[in-house]
Image (cartoon, rainbow, N blue to C red; front, side, top):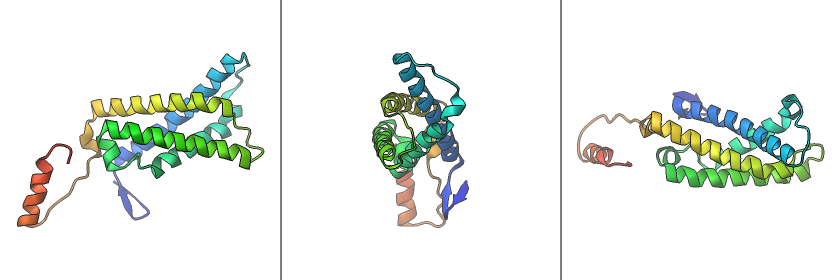
Length: 165
């Protein structure tokens, strides 16, 4: 576990967040390439778009953290994760759309945001399905140690036996 701002974050969550960030950069680039091909524009070198791609990935990652995408519920339930991801990506796109008007020299491509949004959602859901298949939900569950016995310890043991608890 990693300790960050007096919170312990499981290593699996840190790895998932890093993979999400890389996936968001690729989805942003994919949105650019799709839109460029659609309007018959030369794609150009990716190095010219690095600031925009990092802004895209950082704003969506921040929205994902704010919406609780890396919370326990979202990491153990695929359906809950789908809903949180859709809301977080939508919030991130809204923030980016506002940033285009607030920061005049940003030169973000509003027409590409829809393509990048769809690609981001598909890629992040695919990533979560793959992780659920290979790791299962156990990698993201919290582990606790109960010292003692009694009614409360017995209640915790009963809760641990329930699926989804």
